[in-house]
Image (cartoon, rainbow, N blue to C red; front, side):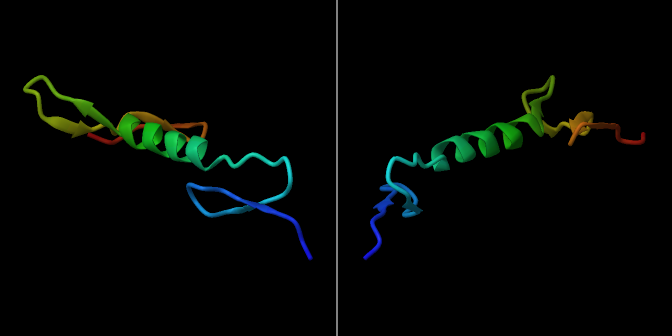
Length: 62
Protein backbone atom coordinates (compact mmCIF):
# COMPACT_ATOMS: atom_id res chain seq x y z
CA UNK A 1 0.00 0.00 0.00
CA UNK A 2 1.34 3.45 -0.97
CA UNK A 3 1.93 6.09 1.66
CA UNK A 4 1.14 9.69 0.75
CA UNK A 5 -0.19 12.88 2.25
CA UNK A 6 -2.95 15.07 0.86
CA UNK A 7 -2.85 18.87 0.66
CA UNK A 8 -5.70 20.31 2.76
CA UNK A 9 -6.13 23.22 0.34
CA UNK A 10 -6.02 21.75 -3.19
CA UNK A 11 -6.24 18.01 -2.51
CA UNK A 12 -2.97 17.12 -4.26
CA UNK A 13 -1.32 13.84 -3.31
CA UNK A 14 2.14 14.50 -1.92
CA UNK A 15 5.09 12.26 -1.18
CA UNK A 16 6.18 12.03 2.47
CA UNK A 17 7.99 15.28 3.34
CA UNK A 18 6.94 17.00 0.09
CA UNK A 19 5.51 20.50 0.45
CA UNK A 20 2.60 21.66 -1.74
CA UNK A 21 3.17 24.89 -3.65
CA UNK A 22 -0.47 25.59 -4.55
CA UNK A 23 -0.58 28.78 -2.43
CA UNK A 24 2.62 30.12 -4.03
CA UNK A 25 1.25 29.39 -7.53
CA UNK A 26 -1.99 31.17 -6.70
CA UNK A 27 -0.08 34.19 -5.37
CA UNK A 28 2.05 34.38 -8.54
CA UNK A 29 -1.05 34.17 -10.75
CA UNK A 30 -2.72 36.93 -8.76
CA UNK A 31 0.35 39.17 -9.06
CA UNK A 32 0.52 38.53 -12.82
CA UNK A 33 -3.14 39.47 -13.23
CA UNK A 34 -2.74 42.59 -11.10
CA UNK A 35 0.26 43.71 -13.16
CA UNK A 36 -1.96 43.69 -16.26
CA UNK A 37 -4.09 46.55 -14.87
CA UNK A 38 -3.31 50.02 -13.63
CA UNK A 39 -5.29 52.86 -12.12
CA UNK A 40 -5.88 55.74 -14.55
CA UNK A 41 -5.83 59.45 -13.72
CA UNK A 42 -9.60 59.47 -13.29
CA UNK A 43 -9.58 56.48 -10.93
CA UNK A 44 -10.75 54.03 -13.57
CA UNK A 45 -8.88 50.75 -14.06
CA UNK A 46 -7.05 50.45 -17.36
CA UNK A 47 -5.29 47.61 -19.14
CA UNK A 48 -1.54 47.92 -18.91
CA UNK A 49 -0.62 47.22 -22.53
CA UNK A 50 3.00 48.31 -22.06
CA UNK A 51 4.46 45.41 -20.12
CA UNK A 52 7.14 42.81 -20.58
CA UNK A 53 5.72 39.50 -21.77
CA UNK A 54 7.79 36.34 -21.14
CA UNK A 55 11.07 38.19 -21.29
CA UNK A 56 10.25 39.99 -24.57
CA UNK A 57 9.36 43.66 -24.49
CA UNK A 58 6.15 44.01 -26.51
CA UNK A 59 4.46 47.37 -26.81
CA UNK A 60 0.98 48.21 -28.08
CA UNK A 61 0.71 50.10 -31.35
CA UNK A 62 -1.01 53.45 -31.12
